[in-house]
Length: 317
Image (tube, rainbow, N blue to C red):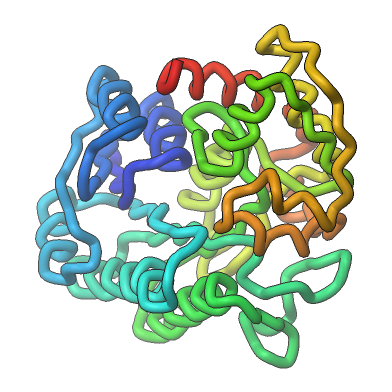
C-alpha cells in the first residue's frame, strides 16, 4: 500500500486525507496542536484510520525523523498563513517548505513533494493570468505584499532544490471553498448573515471547490506530466461574490436585509487578513491545466457554500 504524508492539519489537508484514504492509500497527517475546529477534523480523520503525528515543521530534524518513519511515496505541504508579520509569513511559506524539501532529499529522493502555494504568489499581473514563461521570474511576476512575496519566495526555494534532485509539483489554488472551511472570511460572513444582514458584494472571483482540488492534487502526485512544474488550480467559471451570502442565507432560512456593497467598502465585512485579496476581484486565472487534468467541471458553488454552512454550524452551533 502506498503512503502519503500530509504536513499540516486544516481545511485542505482534511479533505485531501479523506480523499486519499478513499483511493486506497495509507495516510499520515501532521499537526502542531489540536484545538477548536481542528479537534473535530482530527476526530473525523482518526475515525477513518488516518495516522496522526505531532510535528513542528519548523524543526528540520523533526521533519527528517517523521519522513524517515513514515516512508511516504508522496509528501503534501499544506502549511500556510493568510496574514501575519513578515517573519511569520517567511517561516510558514519559505522555511517550512525548505525543511520539508531538504528532508526529502536527505531521506529518499524518490519521494515527490506536492507544494500547495497560492494564486496570489505572483501578485497582480493583469486581469487574465496564466502560468508565467519563467517560474517566479521578476520579468513576469509582481508580488508586492508580504504574503505574495513570501509565497513566491517559497516557490523559488522549491525550484532551487529541484536542481539537487527534488521531485516536486507546485500547485497554486485560487479561492478554495467547501466542507471544513471555517476560515475567518467565511466565518465573519456567516455571522453577519445570521444577524439578518446579507451584504451583496460586487465583483467576480475565480475559485475552486475543494473536492476538485484534492482530485487534482492526487493526479499530479502520480503523473509524470507535471514533474518539476507549477500550475494554477481553478474552475473555469467566475463566481459572483454576492451569491455567497445569498446562498448562506438560503441554507439558513434567513430572508434578511439585502445590502449592496461596492467593492471599495467590501473590507468592512472581511477580516483584516482577507482584505489584501480584494485587489484580485475580477481577476481571471487560466483554467486550462486544471481542465486538462480533471476534464469539464460543473460549477459547485451551491454545494460548496452549503458544506461551509453545515461545517460552521457543526463547529459553532
